[in-house]
Image 1 (cartoon, rainbow, N blue to C red):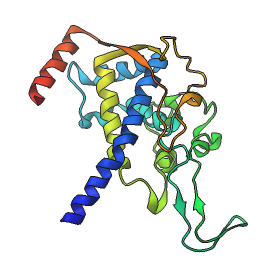
Image 2 (image 1 turned 135 degrees about the vertical axis):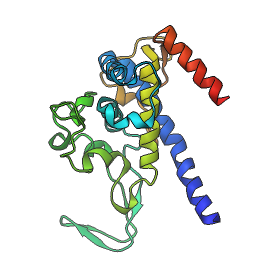
Image 3 (image 1 turned 90 degrees about the horizontal axis):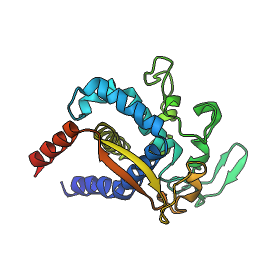
Length: 233
């Protein structure tokens, strides 16, 4: 039981910084791309009919999932992945890798492979994850969606938790608020072009400092938020 508790604790602790970074990236990106924000809001409004989103809505609002997937792709939380060490000598595509070598999987480069993600990989385009009918493209293999979390036996064990947390956060914010006017620490408007170059150069990459204007979308939405808060507290 203690080992199980420790394992679960590691999942939650490991997701603390990374999930926080993903949420802040999401907020900045939808503020910088109002057309994506409006499209996501319209998709939610068409399904929710005046209520707040739940996980049961996941499969009925594919555009929101596309926004989440594009957030993970466009601004990967760990651009160089998590380092691994070879346990034995190995050869990969003619390259000798001795035992004890630290190996990084360059997630940044992998997530910008045009053969996989299509053209304009340096642009924030959620539609790349959808088919022509606007549904999640199920013909793609897992590589398209999970690369940001690593691969194989060493894939992030908390990837499903992280994806679910960001999806619910993304859907809830889109359904309830307009997020606009992103400005930097000096109060200057942030240019979406080259924004990734301003992220912190650390193992967990965070967006640059920014502020946004957040307003409830309507009095009805504001009332729903207050009711939800009262139920929790």
